[in-house]
Image (tube, rainbow, N blue to C red):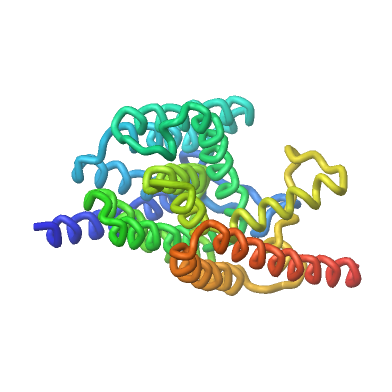
Amino acid sequence: MELSIFMICILASLFSGILGALLIKKFGYKLELIDIANERSSHKGIIPKGGGAGIVFSFVICSVYLGIPFFFWIPAVILGCISFLNDIREIKPKIRLLIQFFCSLLFLTGLNCFFESAFFSNLLFIPILAVFISGTANFYNFMDGINGIAGITGVVAFFFLGCYSYISGFETGYTILFFSIMFSYLGFLPFNIPGASVFMGDVGSIFSGFVFACSAVLLSENLTDFLCISGFIFLFYADELSTMFIRIKDRQSLAKPHRRHLYQLLVNELGFSHFKISFFFGIVQFIISVLIINIKVYGISYILIFYSLIFVIFCLYSYEIRKKITIQE
């Protein structure tokens, strides 16, 4: 029975990912869902955006079919709809941030009503976790700047969420849901790599980061679990946090658009193809995820040492790339 349910969900998600991209590719221009290249873009011309709507739809139909509690999927759907509207007509950043924070609190409130866990039952954790969820949603969006990187990372992240859920003996519905979301990315990706005919848009990237962060909280019984699961998108956190530090050091406004992430420099300044960099990030993230699951059994100290080591390696590599670009200029 579970196998048949699993097959239905992954096929529905694969089809939904494909259909969402196809519809935006065909009707995106009429709906004004377009991304016009500018000086900070890593693409040229005009490309329809919002193809990630298929990923949101697959999440909704699978959640309802699997009987996932509403507190998990309703906030994500609200945020997905707002992000879709933002793809059409830009909503002020402060308003978007407030909505993201509200949706995070909505999820956390529902979680405390349905689940009993020492990790997130403490009221002091709720605002911290709300910041984590909102921050991850935005980080994921900021990292969606070249073809394929958000989709490939999504495949890796939700694959490991599914594996972690299964290994931990979590409720089967969530395990199936995570793998189903992974297949919706697989349906979308052919339209985004190697050359993009459709972009994921905020509806896909904001939603992806939000659902990933909520899933990390949901699956965590303690801080060790939380640190381990969060590492399934470690490279996104590393690139965004190191870039924020550099921009603050250079006295740049964090609200100002830019293309100073490592992945952007590799594509725009050094001329690597989008696919190569996106695939490289995906492979490295896959390796990190495998390692962190195996390191988890040794405890928090080993996890933190591992993350520190990988982050230092990332920063050193980033420094060398930035120095090379400075020399060329």
